[in-house]
Length: 620
Image (cartoon, rainbow, N blue to C red; front, side, top):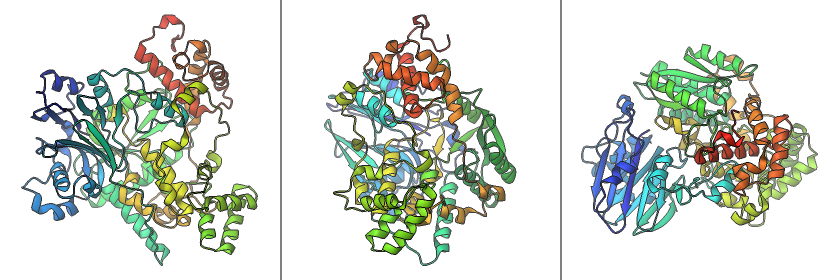
């Protein structure tokens, strides 16, 4: 992944000598090539490529193309070359294609760019800066709008250092503790991430945020033959993996032994046999008694890949001395170790199976499908489907029908909670909350504010799916962890044509009563080792997380009133103490939220450099 940063002074003052140095802080590393930049009255844009990018199948951006910086990969280059050939002057890099697309179609035309990317365009004619991110928000881009200037950076820590913003954003904290993610906000008040599928246009100090990609709620794809759906899925998945494989390089692919990561590895190996493919190395997390071990070993042997196993006991979810990071996060020690391995291997690409569960229909409870039958007046089929779901879910058939009836109401009157239920066995058994009431009221913590409501316009049987996709994308969970930002950290299941296709076909093709991943299993069965085809479960890593959290919880529970999350008014001391003690005993305590509280506490300590003598040292 390359790096882009810059600053725009609205009064067009000369760029001070210290500005480039400060905003590019953190790039003084052997990983990055010489920085290219563009300077003008009140404007500075910079771009730096990772040195190993020279091994990629496409050339890096190199010197700035007029006034654009581009970080990413375009997957529809051939189509764009045909459409824009009259606007190109010999340079066919991704940056040049993107700038040509902007000049022809404007910022709304960015929807035509398929791939993982973020960009910054200085439109001197309009005296406008345009910042944009692809539909999935895979490539990070942060910005800060102040009265006199706009600044931006690929790296959150670099931008926070440049702007010298230290005040925490309460709405970020509320979202983190309430929902497990910070949406498009950051821990730093006034610094935001560019929303996925949007562009931010800044002219003379005024900013507007506009959408260029929308959920494909109006798309409908129906074939006469079941096999046509399977063939289309197989072709799209093959494209999704192929466009992420450089011809000459090393690719690391996560391998958990689940169907999502295993499918990527098997497809990558299949493609490598027919193409001049890259060196493929799988990376797996191992822990004692894991049910995944048998399956990822099976795939390693089947695909004959080089394999790396990382121990969760040697690189735990929480380190005793957390590394400095721009935001609260776990697995830092593991990720830093993975980054070191990637450098040793000369790897440029890191493939993950993220979004696979959602896209491929890995749902235990998708009984909302019945609302579509009710809407179309197919009452006999609706009753038959309700009986099947009732048997699988072990709930009364009248309750299944009632839920489907409520969710099939017109969007303007259907209650939002009808689409919020968690999925079957994944439903939390404990939902208690330690957020302080005063803090909740002050920031208006509200689940409905997390996403737009465009999903409500979808067909009733797909509203829940579109709502979930909207929340996933807005959370920017697909961005790379800080230690892996130098890699092309990418997700085949977030390939836009694949996502749009799977969201446009009938829901019952993806998942049926007791048949999650229905279409995936039909389309990919010959891609997998025979034993993998029977797999129906996956290790949740809950025990690994608990083993890491329990000793920390014991220490934090000793003096709950002294915790920074309590002192700052984010959580209640008494409630937190009770839950920390239950977590230490491995009892039900809504561990996912408590995990976020612990991560926030450790991050706040690292920021304030609280000394060990206060009796709260985690390693004491």
